[in-house]
Image (cartoon, rainbow, N blue to C red; front, side, top):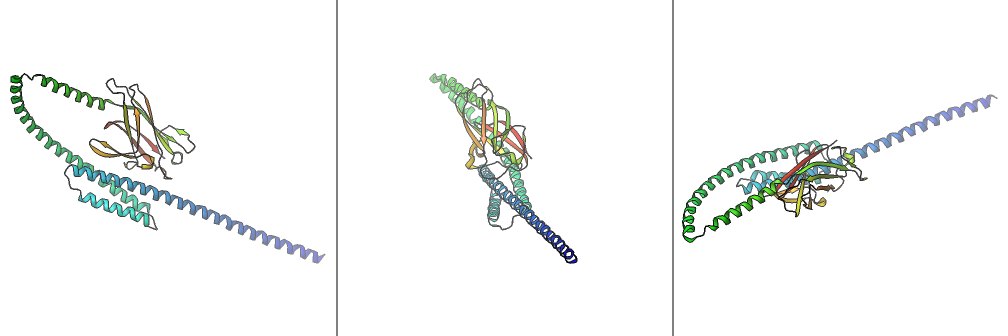
Amino acid sequence: MEETSQSSGFWKVLTGFLAIIVAILAYLLFDANSFKKSQEDVIRQKVQALSSTSIRLDSIGIQLDAKIAQIKSLGGKVEDLEATKKQLENDRMLLRRANTFSVAQYEERIKEYVSILVKKDTEIAKFKKENTKLLEKNKSLVSENVSLSSENILLKMVKQGLSDSLEVYAKRNQALTATVNLASSLQAQLVKVNAISRRNKERSNGVYRVSKIEKIKIAFQLQPNLIAKQNVKSVFVRVLDPDGAVMFDTNAGSGNFELAGKETTYTVKKDILYQNNGQAVEMIYARGGATKYRIGHYTVEIFCEGYKIGSGSFDVK
């Protein structure tokens, strides 16, 4: 009986010891799995941040090129902008080659580039103002010359009986004025920006979660215009991210168009047959790659025939 009791006690101790070992192994396995998941989350976040930073630097590069071309056309100096462009190219190269990536460091760089772009916008406005003054002065001189020439022409017209020329000129001027009014009178109203998920579920409240945006749909109405021609018109949309940079992806249909005589980037384009009946227009922008929208406020601008005809916005949280 005593041996049986000792044997029973031994097995109880052994069983308890094994239970403790099993518990320790289970804890270690759980901790390892948690650590692995945490590492995967960190890597995924870094990849997303790296991709987003690369896209933003590309967009800034496009805007720098546009500013350089614009300032050159106005007769300004662009050496500092060209130096900034070289620095941007260097940052993009380091971004591709660096083994370590600091979001804070590149956020600071991007803020500096955006600040430079804003400063250059002020300089461009100043150049335009100065050029306008020169143009007005030139117009004054031309007007004086035209006045003198007109007197001579009028005398010749009276002598030659060519009074009909004034009527022809007036008709051409009226046609030009009508064309300008037609372009400026087009309006896009009831502008809405909806989010479309990967499962093609559409949301329309104007505030969308990052995980629920696979595409965006820009919808609006073109108001009737009694003098508008019913023909094919190209509608351009620019989507500006929270930093004010134009979202640009050639694989999704982005490109360049002329605005106020200058080449400007657009996010998405659509050719429509203008029917002069308050027609509804829908445009889809499917951003390429796996890059998600950043949190913040987005602005949408709509252009047609060289004029801004409407705008809207949405938020990502």
